[in-house]
Every structure is written in structure tokens, then in C-alpha cells.
Image (cartoon, rainbow, N blue to C red; front, side, top):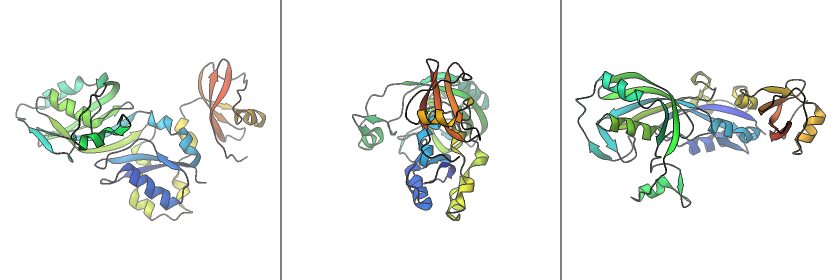
Length: 294
């Protein structure tokens, strides 16, 4: 079984699931999943977990993400991006660099956001985007998100390009629509590129044409190790007997363990064996690798 993480630079025009299925076929992987969809319009980082790495995908799904966004001012669309139908055209003559800076400042920090109708969120078991395509709109609950950083890159030809680092659950199309409304002109996403997920950065990505030319027995050199997904957790060493009990779902005592939090568990040779959590003074297994070498 193939185990590890591939940081794919998703091309424009393909859905995240289409790319995932392509990678599964290419690498003959029995088990794989991506960690956070990108719209077909978007490009950039799509982490794909193979084999045992799928057990840890939630730690990337919940991580911060960074995007480079270009928004077209003066136009709103049904989908909030360039693929939707135009629903409003407004004047942009009052927009200048200072106005943009002032508006962007209001979006930094903790804020609330209403998910768009064109999203994969479900209503009575049906994805919202399917209802939206039928012309149906339902009420959505607002959710809190965090905009850690929002920086203007350029403003030209009625387009704003900015970078944003945001928390899980942030919809960039909604952010752009909200910014456009605050600017009193409307806006939609013209282009979108994800440049980081968690600790993974843009220079670690591999693009699709490169992967199509890699032979099956060569590609493993590009896979990142599973433990890179949880490198932010403190490391503790566990013995073979401890691993025996942890893999059977039993908690263990370890005197040198921290008082709380998640722990990256390794063998004496430094090999990663799983993730544990300190609960009531013991280490409880959370995600243990099924296959380990000595």
C-alpha cells in the first residue's frame, strides 16, 4: 500500500474529485483522499493523502490556508465567481487604493460569514449547490471564521489582487462578495490560487504534467511522510510493549509525557507510529498506523 502525502498543484478546469481519481488510477492506490476541495476555477495546493495518511487528514482539513485572489469589481454573479451569471453591474469610479485599504482592514480578525448557496454544504441531505442550480435558496446559518492576514497586492483595471490567510471554513467567494458590497460596487472572484495549507508551502507542490510523466516506482520520492501532518505536536518515544497496547485501543502511562494535548508517538529509531492524546494522566491512542517497520 502506498502511504504518504502528495502536494498537488491542481490545474484550472478540473474538480478536486476528478484530480483525486486521476491520482488513484495513476499510482494504483487502493485508498486515497484529498483534504479540502478547490473549485474547478481555482488552482493551487490540493493535498492528497494515500493509504495510512488518510487517518490524519482531519489535521489538514482543520488547518489555516493561504490564497492569492483576484476580484473583479463592479459585477456580481450568481456563483460569486467568473462561472456564474451576471446579476448586477455597478459603478466603480469611486474606488481608490485608500478606500480598498480601509475596507480590507475591517475584515481582519474574527468575523462571521454566511456560506454561499453554491457550496457542498448539505440541507436535508442535499448539497446546496444542487438546490441553487434549481433556483432554490434556503436559509444558511452564519459561522465564525478568522482572517489572520489580508494584504493588498495590486489594484488595476478595476481588479483587486490580495493574499489572505484564513481559518477552516472560510469561503473566499463569500469574502469577495462581502468586500465588494462594503465597497458599494459588488465583486466576484476572477481567479483563485491556494498557496499553502497548514505548514505546507507553495514550493513543495508538484504540478499534474510532472506527475503524468513519473513512473510508478519513481514517484514515492515525492511523497511527504505521514508524520509531517502532525509535526506541530510534541514528540515522545514509546516502547514496543506500549505500542502493543496502544494499537489495541488501550491507554498507557508515560512519565515524561506533557500534561495535556496531542503527542506524536515514535519508536526508539525515530519512526512515527501514531498520534496519542493525554487524557487523565494517561496517553490514549487516537490514530495509530496499522503497518510499521522496525
